[in-house]
Structures are given as C-alpha cells and as structure tokens.
Image (tube, rainbow, N blue to C red):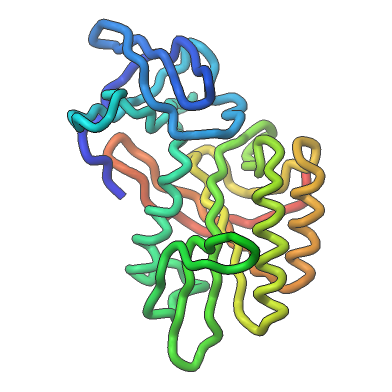
Length: 236
C-alpha cells in the first residue's frame, strides 16, 4: 500500500479530541492534521515526537494533512492509521501472500455476520470452508520486542472474538489477523492489564478454534506492506 502523496515531516505539538493533532512542520508553520486513530496511542502521542504527514488538496476535506507515521528510535517506524491494516491485508490476500490463507482465490470485504457486525473479509474457494477474517491494528510496545493488543479497552473487539467463535461452531474457518504496524517488535501478546475482558475473550476464542495470526509490516515513507509472520505469546 503506497501513500498517495509524498509525506512531509513535523514535530507533534499535541493530539486532542482523539482525531486532531497540532503539528509544527519542519519547513515552517503550524498545521492541524487529522489523526486517523481512535485509540489511546500510548507512547506514540508524546509532544515533540517526529511524525510524518500526508498532504492532500481534496476540497471536500477540511484538514489538509493526515498523520500517517511516527518516527521511532534507531531508525524504526510506527504506522498510526488504523485503516491501513485492512488495505495492506487486502493487497496481501489478492496476491495470496498470506501463507495460511493462500488456498483461497476470492474474497469480499465488509460482509454482514454475527449480531449487527461486518467481517473485514470473507474468503471463499470451491471445496473449502468459508474463512471469516477480522483484522486488528497493533502499535503498542512497552516491554522489549513485544507488541501488545489492545492499547485500551475494546468491548467491540471482544464481541468480534465471540462472533468468530460462533463462526467456527457453524462449521467455517475464523481468523483473527493482527497486523503489527511497528518495525521494532518481534512477537505479540495480549495486554491483559489494560483490558482483561479482551484477554479472556481471546483465550476463549482460541480454545473454540479461532485461528490467531500475527504479521508485522514493512513501513517506510513510501508506504506500508505485509511483512513476516510473528509468534503470539503469553499475556502481559
């Protein structure tokens, strides 16, 4: 997934009202950018952080910049746009780049299932059970090379896990796909201290047969791509 326009650097002044960020551009001037992330963004919204914005000239958009990346120590990156993982996974599914799902030749996004929910992707292939795939964005890191999910309480996320467990009970495949939008992590665990309810739902869903996949991402100022499979370990 490539960014539509070249990114420009700046320093974060503050993030507020969840979806807004004031940024001092390195070329001069202060702008308000759209922050496409409703989560806590723990560790990724500290004032002074060097970040990268995508400018736009769309007359329908009030804000002319969108926050896309955070620059981390030692040359690492984090993507902050929670819509990016679905786009990355869609491209990977189209190219059959996800080894565990490469047998499926067709997929559709946003298919109704469960209770007033829509699964991110429904994969189909003659002779195979349908595969329901939910995608989650991961960008929390607090301990060594561990990525963690979630970074705040997500009752919606726990609901998705329960609905995927029901998909398995109905005879289909169900997959929870975690995309780690950081380049400094090598494994994933659930942040049970931040959301014990989600961690419990994760355990119950895995016991019910929901497949848990985790991949990292290749991140640069040009775009974000699917990386390598990562192991999923014990809870935080």
